Image (cartoon, rainbow over all chains, first blue to last red; front, side):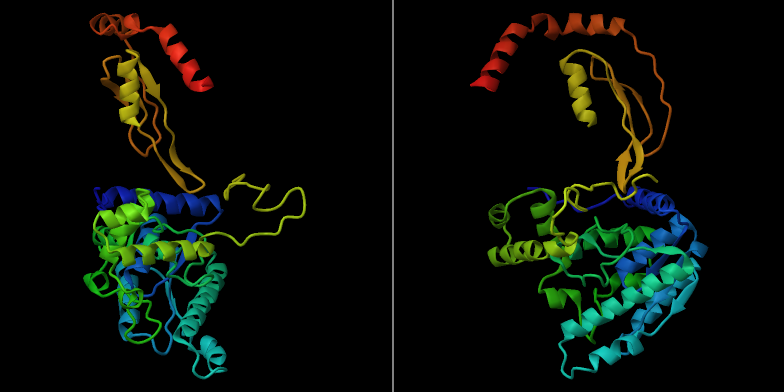
Length: 274
Length: 92
């Protein structure tokens, strides 16, 4: 079985900038806001939005917490300078800490979720203030693995990069001229010092993207992936992660009572009538 | 899609014109690139990918005769046999 994750970056760039323009104008807007973490995913979403809408129409938001690495802020600033977009920097420490401090010894997961949701609150507030839609920054790898905070970093009005695996985002980043330090550094949610995505997940993006491509895009079953040479435990672990996190990818179920229920019988396209 | 249209044009020794939309429908991207294939499976017209376009071409209906004389797939076809087989598959 052939695994080819290479993309045509110029074609993808054209489709995704057109997607952003089309979705935002259909919704009656001309502007966007993007939370810039300093990482490669938000850098790519931001660069696409700036190219699609014009830099003056994209607000870059930097949201450091007291433990965030200095690199994150610096790398986000590099992008703001490069694209010449308006920006705001708002510390989330004073938003998150009163909740975190209520329970000494709170787990890192809970703290991380609180930070991600505090950032979502600021993004949506700035969305209203700037009259721009929130452009999402989640890639296909993390969406499939559920490596995201529900109603936190996953919250957005549109997501241009959600069908690109992490390794494909890297290819697009090169074409978009994202500064090298952002492309080269190890991916991290930066929710606690020294955290890396690959360390937390227990495998590399290179490995898992190849497996996801077979399981999801090519619809091979787990047994066939094992036969193709993937470690059995790894395949099982990834498959279970995809299955277990389905709830993060769909809207919550509504208990049906009437003859016409939102989500079951009331099914219009998102851009219905526009 | 182009392979399929080319295959149909060749197999039925006929022209196949396929109009594909471009742009976005609820976020879903369509690639444009409408095509016309002649009875030999040769591409005679193609619209640009991902762009709206009015693409015109003339088709030479005598090409049907020339291709079908060279490759008499339609003449040799046994539609009653095909029909019988289809009936058998559908109603067995």
